[in-house]
Amino acid sequence: MASAILLAATVSAQSLKPIKLVTPSKERGASIMQSLANRQSVREFSEKKLSDQDLSDVIWAACGINRPAEGKRTSPTAMNKQDVDLYVFLAEGVYLYDVKNHSLAPVVAGDHRPLIGDRQPTINKAPAILLMVSDLARFDVNVGNDVKREFGALDVGIVSQNISLFCAGCGLVTVPRAFMDKEKLRTLLKLSDTQVLMLNNPVGYPK
Ligand SMILES: Cc1cc2nc3c(=O)[nH]c(=O)nc-3n(C[C@H](O)[C@H](O)[C@H](O)COP(=O)(O)O)c2cc1C
Image (cartoon, rainbow, N blue to C red; front, top):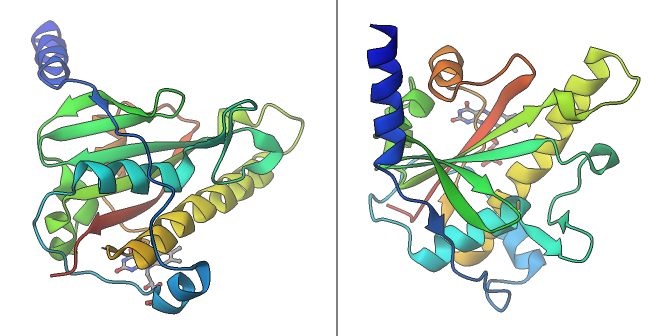
């Protein structure tokens, strides 16, 4: 039985292919002040799929590498520990952002967006949902668990705000959300004890 479940999970991830994201466009969007003026939480989405450019750009804006020589990113992290992993939920499956290669690695096939929308069903209509997970094990320094959790939450908050500002500046909509079915997501994504599900941002076009 256990081996049948394992086989099913492996097959399910294999049915997805890695997605090479297009080169991010740095020449677009409203000014930073206009983006701040536009930023707002929106919870209704058109079901239209994100264009390749928008998918790439919102992910890069979230936590992509902006200084390749140093491997540093659009979003800062405490002590540059780069603890935030970005899971991307699309209609066909869940992917993990491979930051170094600016690509999406398959995690599990199937539409799992309802685990994130949970009790807010309009969220499940968003064509992409970005889920931020902080891996506290990357804070391999002599500080207590409370401090590690605080660092993780702060780092995730910045990634989320990058997503919100990108959306506000480029004609997309989003909302930062803490609610989701954490228990089921933890099992689905096979997270370890140190990986903390913190926030999600559904992303799409206005309805
Ligand atoms: C940490 C955090 C968690 C949030 N969680 C949710 C959520 O689970 N569901 C939701 O609809 N909105 C959520 N929000 C959005 C807030 O409700 C929203 O930001 C607030 O009402 C202010 O509205 P504005 O973003 O349009 O300024 C969250 C916001 C933050 C910062």
